[in-house]
Length: 71
Image 1 (spheres, rainbow, N blue to C red):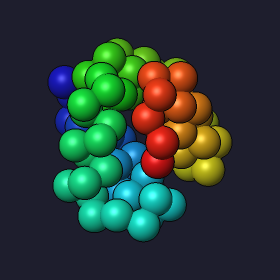
Image 2: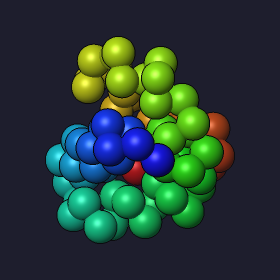
Image 3: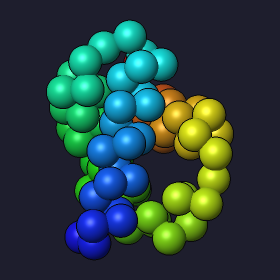
């Protein structure tokens, strides 16, 4: 993973944690459990990093909801 992708993933974990009122560790664990980090954020970094934060957090919430996980 590139440095830019790593920084993006960390930023998105913190953004999700803030929206979901949980710690970044809790958000990371929930996201990684469903493959959101390794199967979505990292592989699609090139496209995703061009989007706004609010859109991306909503998109991640939809990704999680599609897998039956409430956040």
